[in-house]
Image (cartoon, rainbow over all chains, first blue to last red; front, side, top):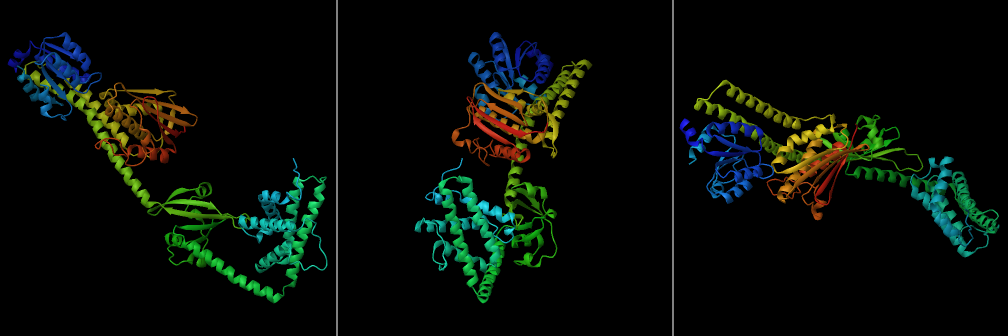
Length: 125
Length: 513
């Protein structure tokens, strides 16, 4: 686990979710592994932050959010960068795997177990 | 102003005033007790006036000279005499005696004179002539029927009476047959609300009597209808719903038609609506299940976030363990967050449980609290779909109302708006709810900007099983049930109309507040 932290700590990560409690708790988690965690509450702000921080390595995002939803934000981000890692944190699994593969995203389903999170973090290249 | 009437305009004038004449003679008949023996319905009275006016008209067509009388006449071949003879035979056979008939006839004459008095000035030159003509006409009618009466032998009269008596007995039998042939239960009450007669269906349903006519011929005791029905409802309502054993009836009480006042009372008809009621119950149950399904999906929505937050708090603790970062401050922070989320989870469940708890009584509730409940159930789902939900309350008063039912209706309407906004992919989605107190009613207006309801389906939206939604979402019961809740529980109404940018539903309910 400590090695994982060593591997990830220099990466800049963006987390987008409209729920304050989830934002706070997840931010706390991510900060244990990453030195720089940027947080915001909707897709519109997420896109702005991404545009201003070209060195963001990973984006974690919720889907259902006010102003701009997660999918719209991902499509905009993909126009800018095809290789940024995007992890969708979703409440439902109505989309098929192929859909997420197509837009080159990983996805995890809420509520998130510890092992799932660690697996996702391990997959980051 | 009095009108000038000449002998030429007399008949049209009498015909125009047929109803007046009818009610005038009825007035005399009631005042001097003739109605004890006369017809109970309006039509025979009207026909008596028509008969008199018609024979006067025939007489006038023959001659406008005053129809004086003379000692050698037979009084049987001119129009007034023919009318008099016919009426004499008819009434004698019904058991009317001469003095009764003759004296009532004096009031017929008075009735016609009263009408003229009200319309012709006595100084009018035609007045005396018309009065003389009318008086001689009535004299001729009277002379003819008195002559007819006097000329008939007592044997003939007895014969006539016995034939008529048989006919009358058959009339009664016919009444009983007609009454017993009615397929719906029917009960006749007297003026003291005692059951006078029950038709066959009613007797078998309420008294286990299976033979036609049994109630009429062998009723034992006086039964007041109040032992079955609420008297106040019988007196005040045109119709009301009534449950008897396992059956539901619509009850139609009707005051007996009798202008003579002899037969005061009611006839009560019953219509069995049990099957209708049963299908309505099924509809209600279906809609309740549909509403529950929607609720459960809303609960899932509202639970997902706190459950996710809890799982992240736990993940934090686990990560701290793995990374040797565990300290009491961090642990405390995570535990407190978990507790906070559990309170939230618990409150969500309470909100929904309250909604489904059956409550039969009205409650005092502030309008703002009512809308807070709506918001706590649906707010999140609207927020996720980027729908701006605005609430405007003009007077935040307290009302005495069935809050659960009203919330159910508001939710159903908002839910329709929500789905229309999503389906039509409207840009700035808005739902607006406003509540105002208008006199003794509460008006809840729900508007959206989803483009409105197509005019061709507008009149169908409150029908059961009508849905415009895609199969998985619509049961087609939301608005139907809403309407029946508002009509039956609140005695109110729901009105739907299209406005500039979308649909507008107005829920109008009377309030005590």
